[in-house]
Figure 1 (cartoon, rainbow, N blue to C red):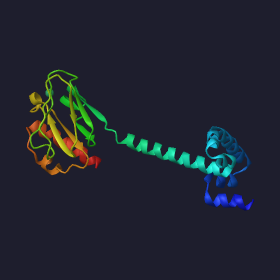
Figure 2: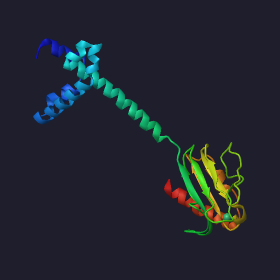
Figure 3: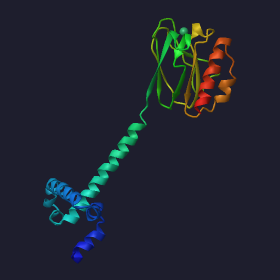
Figure 4: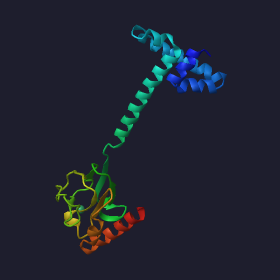
Length: 210
Ligand SMILES: [Cu+2]
């Protein structure tokens, strides 16, 4: 190895070079093939940087840096994609898995920014907030009968909801967003007997998930 080459290796520590030194014949050949392909793709560089295109080590360093930038941007893009809000559907039913007059599911775990869509699968229902079962700073809300209602949950906490005509029959649901600071207040809220029974079951289900 000439002194110029080792100087370049120090100046541009290139994983590629290190890898091909370590790897066996087959791998080295595969990398050589890939490199000549890339070399062809980067031919345009010769116009501005003749020394780069003529020197394999300089070119490898250049390509590696470009690949790193692309990979970093892709990783950032993926991370940004993951924070996208999701939607959870809740059906309003005369008869569901847990009995008559139910929200299904009746326990929704969401993240801030998510939406919960209440679907009028069977007629005669609506969804509205229960007083004293909302996080601080969240206004009460009320959906129309037989209409889809989309609730965007921006604040962390527990949201208790009911169907107005079937509240006393126990048609209630709980939405938990992030770490609920109002958990104690919501668990202490008073509801009609059947609604309270359903909430007790829902709280137990939520506690079991913790
Ligand atoms: Cu109802």
